[in-house]
Image (tube, rainbow, N blue to C red):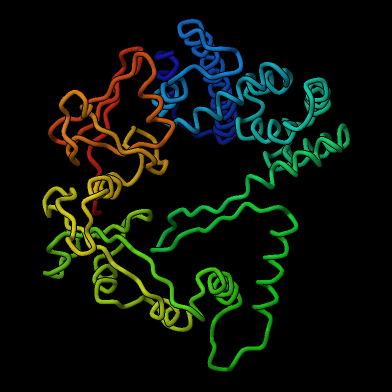
Length: 407
């Protein structure tokens, strides 16, 4: 396999455009085929770990998703989804599996088909797989998903109705950082409610406004979404915003970027404005933010290393202060390649074995990785410099340097 990588590294673009296009197409097939090979290797590793641990067929061996994720530079959640995809392709969608292995279909397309056909029984999935096979190489992942859903609805419409009812129970709202100090707010809703929300926002944006209101249609829709949720137009809300910054950025006007936990870096001038109680921007949205009651918890960092050094004493309580410090210091799960939210803060050296309860002896982890560390063969170590080392059952070592709290 290392030889294959070496060969690919030697590929150069020639002067012949036809040859260049052919190379691009072939490399794309190789990329897809390599992904399919990864899925096969994952299944082989699963078989090995299942035999070692005596894991029942309906359960995933302990630590497998974390082990796969570390090897593929992905989170345990992402690895778990790929394992599920691999099982379904092998067991229920043999034609899709062959197309993927041949590099004629990418993993995103395969995932869309698997999701669309999930409500069906196994025999219907096999039939749908056969019906789709001839079409898939020419479809985008979105087109493949739509076509697969249409086939699934025709084969078993009642199953689709039941799946929709179950999916409604999984509705959620998430946020993700976006450029320029913005966030993307995403809601997964049943189709009726989702369409109704969007229609209401469009209606609000189309309503007459005073001449002095210079907001765009999109801005009105965004503000209309925020107002009833926060209640800022009637009752002030109280929220706490963590702000991590160096002392020189806070006091000396330095340009060291600050960090808002749960979001990411922000420019130093904006951080200082937040400390002073100011809000960037003008108009109704900014006024609404000023009306809200916002507690700003300040954390200071070492100006040289950027690592979290102390926590502001205001509103401090002894209970939970170490956990809060670790969560804000680490930001997300400390296991390499994982950006999942921190759900567990654990001792590295167990308390029962003399480990102290301090930030220097604790790391933040997502739920999946915290449980994975309890699986046979896993170990972790935190050195004095804050470097976390995770050792997998094969003896492979993966390191995670300390997170810079600012910048």
